[in-house]
Length: 109
Image 1 (cartoon, helix red, strand yellow):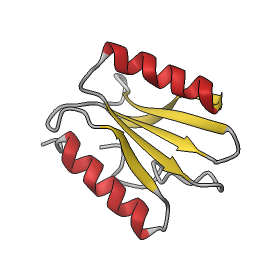
Image 2: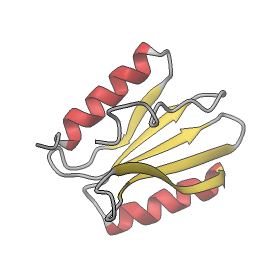
Image 3: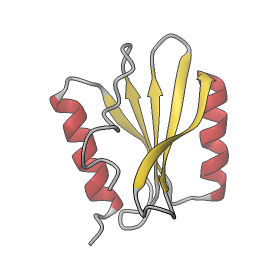
């Protein structure tokens, strides 16, 4: 059974908070089935946007880079995704060291 989007977001924000990594919800999507994008802001004008993808060959879910570079360009990419999907969640993580924890076990599910 898959977690609801809201449950996953709450768990992710808790995990970040426990690691002293600031994060907040930029866009609140559908609580049940909304997709989630994560923006990593390194606080130097640069950012990376991540989206969860599904590997049809293995059945695995993993986080893939949607866009990276100038923060304004990443924001534009995320805004474009939101225009297609109003149920989309956007979480912004702020960390100068580039930590996002998406590569930790359990966060791709």
